[in-house]
Amino acid sequence: MSPVLSYQLENGIATLCLSNGKVNAISMDVIDAFNRALDQAELDQAVVMITSGPGVLSAGYDLKVMTSGLDHALPLVTAGSKLSRRLLSHPYPVIVACPGHAIAKGAFLLLSADYRIGVAGPFSIGLNEVQIGMTMPYAGIAIARNRLSPAAFERSVINGEMFNPQGAVDAGFLDLLVEPEALASSALAAAESLKKISMKAHRNTKLKVRHDFLAALDKAIEQDKETLSLD
Image 1: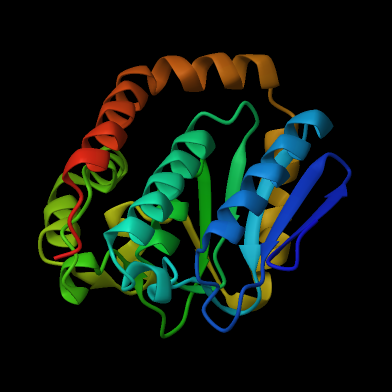
Image 2 (image 1 turned 90 degrees about the vertical axis):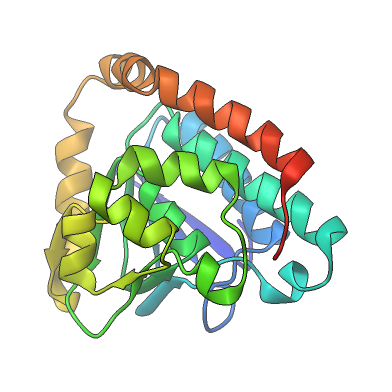
């Protein structure tokens, strides 16, 4: 489907595989490819599985764009927040199979999915925005507040604390931790299990459960358009 995001449909499971350089930077091209892939997954009525090659899911937004000025960074951050919003309200289950590091927007991909599987190893997962001098956007705060444990929320968002894989499970970034060689089979098993649920009930219940959260996220995205600062 795209050189930065492949799409493979097999037995009702749509696998979206990130492939954008060494750290799978989230660029506007990646976000556009995600949106096209999600359009196709809806047409295919498929469970969505997001993954990448070994070592890193994503290290976050494209730093070349983020450091080139607010005029360039704001559209990227806005598009990224809208992608998270779309994933959180996607009508079919969304799984992330994280093969290693997930940092900043990479970690927000985890927080935007319905089920998250990570791997054991010397990997870092978390929101490092304040470490690199970026004030956390309102949309990021809204997502983190909803998905992380209360204690981990403040440590992560305010302190920029990074977590090892087990810590990421405890914090709320991940639901399951497996050995690297078991990631693909574990993600497939999760997708096969989710295929058995009622998709109509899943969609309607998801929207009920996340109604207030999604409304708050919509408001936050609009706030960020007016107040976003890179320092």
